[in-house]
Length: 227
Image (cartoon, rainbow, N blue to C red; front, side, top):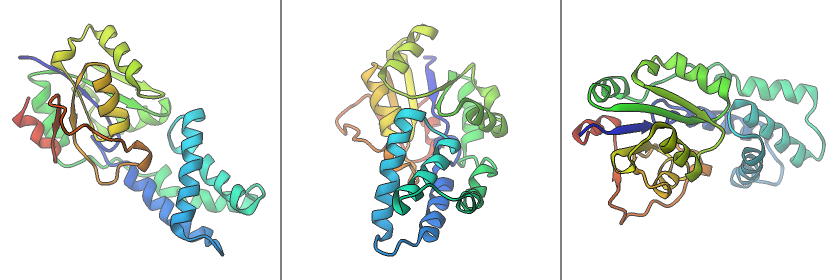
């Protein structure tokens, strides 16, 4: 039976957070705080990112804002112009990085698109996410692309209404329990959880292991065994 497969983008179709983590590692080295260790510094940065995500959303611009605010909190003053330049240098690999597709994604999407309707649902900055979608070369596989500020149960309910989806025959496929799996299930959709070891800590949540409408896979190409 033809299904509707809704795909997340970052860390499901291509690597994303691993680049942020590399920048954070370099950033924590650069901070070199005299009394706080790396774990304590990371906890402060996570708190700042959590607050900024709630107000400003996601993406590189918000991330850079968080790096500046972390400096300001730790040094009890705004980042200097020189420090701002250094932060930009640290983040260069993030700002200018090339899309790295997760193994098997392109071929798998091609096969799935021949049998099912594919949608793309990604959250973040509109311009930045569209740039990544364009660079990925995957957009032709999807009948519709949606870039949203946040993913919650209401987001999925709106998607169901807009496309007249039958929840029993629709699946959200992603790596994030918080954004992909839990809210999709709250909206009555099925879900496919494909973990990524580099998933952002703020995207962690508990996936009910007893939920038989969540399919757990370890690799993206395994989708072909189920759809």
